[in-house]
Length: 205
Image (cartoon, rainbow, N blue to C red; front, top):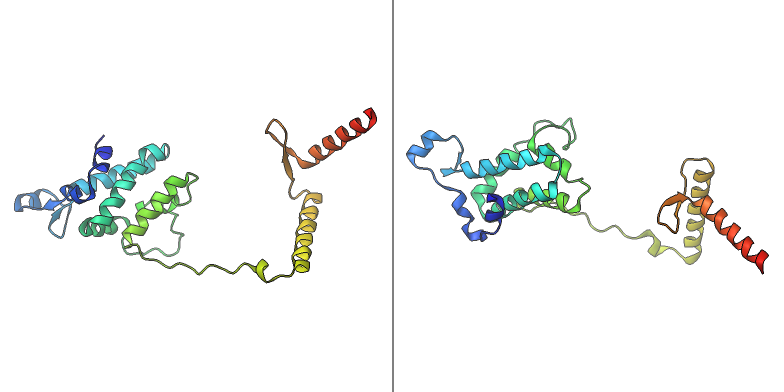
């Protein structure tokens, strides 16, 4: 389709999607930015939102158009600024979390926690490019284990074992294991089965 065709067009040629508005076009269309006709970009945005609202087949149906718009924004300033005005208008509602709501911004933020790694990465990249690829990165946190002695590490490991044991005995969690056939089962059953097999082996000896 048209999205796949445009995805294979060199970045330098994507400016065919926008053109200076003539006086006649300016009267016919409301979709313009800095004197440029943004009809094609608006169509791509609407198509992207429809794909998001569909709620399925994101990898095949959504990622191509998201990737295309990301390339356009990265290469053409007017396209980026126009799309940013549509997707990330000035924030007025600060009482709700960014993913709560029905705006295109809310929908894209929700995609950043999608189970499909490819989908959430392209959604995050799109928003990042809209923000001129600027942001704050936290410094890596030091690993507390690096400063511990072997005795301290052993002590912390035993604390963790005791905590899991207590949670297991109180039925808060159920430790699970994997049977030979690949299915999950409570770890206690696997241990009992293993002990029974060892007992049978010792009896046969």
